[in-house]
Image (tube, rainbow, N blue to C red; front, side, top):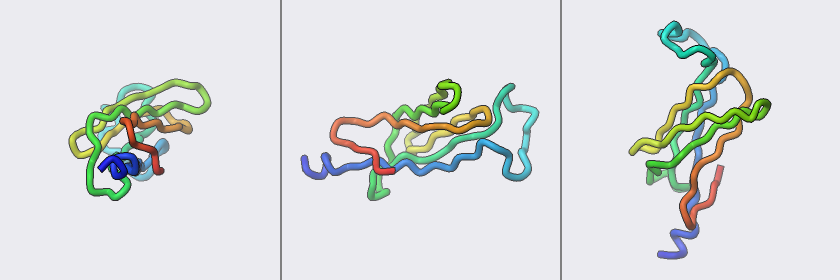
Length: 100
């Protein structure tokens, strides 16, 4: 069991859309400065287990500004961000490693 726990890896499936990709519904409802959305699901490497209550941080690579969200019970998260390039970090627990 320890071997399995040590072998658990986190898969970060993300869809980054920091620029418009088609119609934006309700664009007038977006907070000022929001240019897009970063969303994804955090799961174990085999994809069978969603990892909830994990902090996901998107850091703008040019400005260093950070935006955070926590994963839901299904492992999903959504972060609204201004346009830019972002580096993502996921909170890992003991014995876990980041796969992609």
